[in-house]
Length: 295
Ligand code: GLN
Image (cartoon, rainbow, N blue to C red; front, side, top):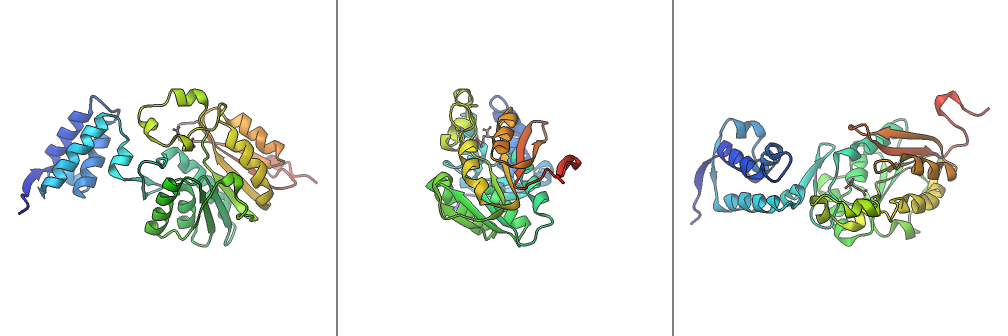
């Protein structure tokens, strides 16, 4: 026999929030996310104090999540999924958690693709697939290939592809040693590992639970921009665009790498916090922007 008890979700929310308040920065937001997911209710239902028949597993799940969260284990891993561009992506140990900052790169990619029909898109170091699969879902006519080398992350990529119905082609392999994806592509996007040695030494406790191989871009953080740019500029079609997410302060170094690879119209795009988060460059013979087209 299952002992179900009637519980007041608002009370559970407040208790959860209070317990978390000494440990996390946004206890109310996190408590909402936890109660919403465990009881499958909306935020307004929580606030109006809806009563629910709860089974012991649900109560235990809340307690387990709160305990682990107080140890700074990432909320996203505890919930098992996280929203990106309005869609839930499955996440867990071994895959980088999608960040809201990355939406800037996706918006830029979608803007570039707007006038193109049936574009070919390549997403490198895909992780959960939040970039590549979002592009595929926003542009169902696009032919998207997503590449990920970590088997654990690849597992999330393929599950998200299936679950969201993105129909991307997912390849398990090292983007730096992959002969299979020759292109040419209209757009190549990547959010590669870009943290520096110093960043890694100063990681927030939560981020230490994420895979280091998805974070660390060598001592200067620029390893993947150097290596990927060399290989993939050759795989852009004329007029095609390379778009990277970058870390704070990397804009000049990465812009120079793109310019050294003969890309033109290099743009630096800030995220919602005003930090330059995305660099794009185009494979064309002339500079389109600023009215400087070559004669
Ligand atoms: N944005 C992540 C962080 O700051 C890093 C992601 C990456 O290296 N691509 O933790």
